[in-house]
Image (cartoon, rainbow over all chains, first blue to last red; front, side):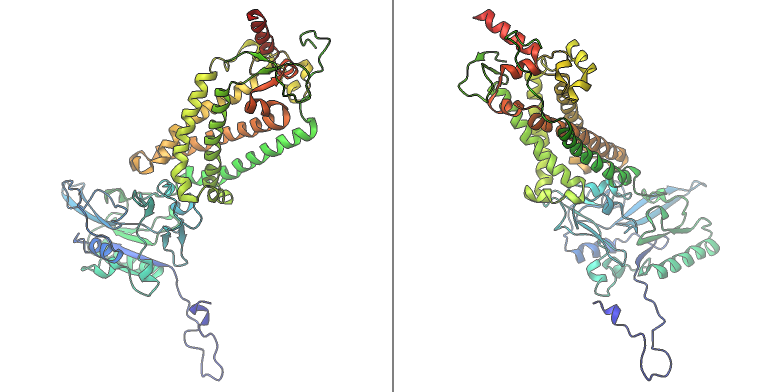
Length: 296
Length: 225
């Protein structure tokens, strides 16, 4: 029995209602990333490595401030730097913290064939359970954000856990803890959405970012990581954030109707030959006719 | 292939001579191919449906199955090409096949007296061979995309989707063919299963199911006598 079910609803002989009896808890958690106040310091990258026990390894330099081209199995949190040319020809340096989006409708989970290798908690966190992972990489095909990464040594998939270990103990994720500008926030999905919307409104009304808005894509049922973007109409500019992410229809079809069509086809195949046997039985050898060489 | 007619002390109640239908090499290749295909089949079914995931436990669990499935697939491809080298000429569709195909209803209904005579393999056997042959080529090519998922950059992600689609369709096609093949080889055509193990069939069996082949073999044999 979880602690939540032991919250007090009614109290005998008590003046007034039980304290907190009319309060409902919002279990959905979310991380808010305000790209407009990110300074690209990468403290979150370091905090992520430290908390999750990975060492800093050699990186690739590709003429930008970005640590490496994309996240890796042992590098779950990466700030993507993008020089974006505005319509008036001026440059804007966009910085976006890239990590697992913790979709409400996770494509990785749908694509995964291994029992229990990917779970989604009630609080919305999507977590890989490496002890059940078979390393097939189907999750890569299911993910619209290109997040799951393969460890070739252990042959297991890895990605950001939204610090499910910390969150379960009432702590915020390590990246949030380390952010010096307050561009990262963590809390209930409802609170984070409210905060994000008010920041976007502020950006639109007071800072001249007329297209500022919140990135919480409906195509994957909303995400457990939401962004405030200067220009929500062009998320692609932020290092390939998809405009309308959704689980690929091939994956949906493969894991949905195709499964049942295929299973029924195989079942009918086995039933078909069985019924054929019941109806017609084995083939008879023609009786030999007067040694005529087999002409019937 | 060997076409010698041999007298065998082993009988299955059929009188008369027994004919060598499959050489030792052919039988070994058939069963090596079976081994590789069957491994891919059960591990593939495990990855296909959560209700068949337990099949992976039979061969050492999910991660082990995932590791070996592609290698056994490569092995089966090699085995298949070996069979192709052996049987390519025997498996070409002939006019006799076309006549037989037109009367296939009689074959299904065990009305074999009304069937036109067939050569060493009938049209159905040839069809099975070509489904497996082209099936494994598609499975191997699409399988490479599934084997090295991260080898496909995300800008070419449509290749991943294509791989999955082709792999599933080709696998289901070979499974359908496999079900019919096993049924016919064991239950429907008696003597077939023994022939792929010990190599021999009775003359009556050969006359009934593959008369053109029987005539060819015995003619050649008597000419050489």
